[in-house]
Length: 401
Image (cartoon, rainbow, N blue to C red; front, top):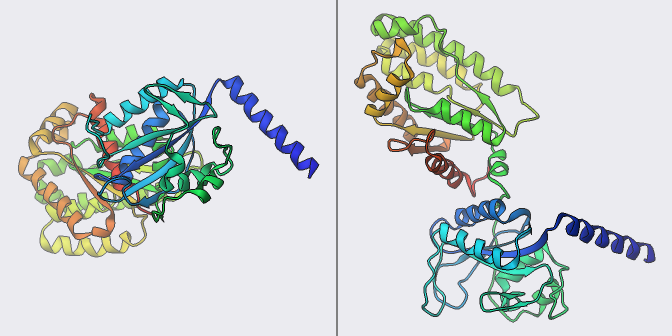
């Protein structure tokens, strides 16, 4: 027993010594939402807190709880611990800005209201603060089951500096009788860690939609293995754009063989230094293009070969389709300047778009996400790129893969 106490004292001293040396403070926050996509609201708040406040050390389980103090939809609630170098007032200011960024509207009206996000500072280490704008520890934390339960997940032995009781004691003594439901949801500290739970993301789209560019950006920003379609050396492609009826079948068969070989090779070779895989195509595109370009008899023969191959390939965890209107597609094709693409007709592009959308409707198990990028420039405009990432994030938060 004496040895254990010495070890605990040594650990505690070391922990606070490093905290002092690094000049950071552990702060505990409570997050809740009961409007819109509640889970994604909280996930976005965690990401912004990690970016603007400090490193998120740990995240509690996600709990569903009744609204507290007013009649409204149930909340989802969590608690997190963060290492921050911000002083208390700067921390409060940053938290309020994050709430505002995520659609929280504060008014002078008294009483509680539904909200997209609610972030409360519970503790700033063991500091006791009483000011006009900030009171710490949070004056109501010991009264709220939806705070104490998730807080007990991550800080069961943390002592309230005024009550001299740890979280477990406060939880046992809490008179709030609201029933909390522990959900199966898992939240992540960063978007990189969220994307890492996916094995494979396929970015698809029509010719000139920007799928390769987006796949490259995601790969660079989130440490993913990049799988790009190799098609420029296909000898039938320039001939196909000159005479589609003559070269359609050899072109599609050549693409299918090349895609199958490349796809199986790339997706079967895991890179231990990468978090997941992202590609600018999925092999199912072969069937979509073939349906548009081939005659019925040719397509029926092609379909038999394709079905045999498709059984063997890795399916993406998430299939993202970038929808782009025909006018923008033609402009993008013109700007990238590939000579053999310059005579592509608007009608052909529209048929390809319809083929992709029909495929997505026919395969609900594909985990497909359609993103309209007609008015976006995710290369030049950071906010447009962020919008696409947020769409993917919202789609996968709460799903199990």
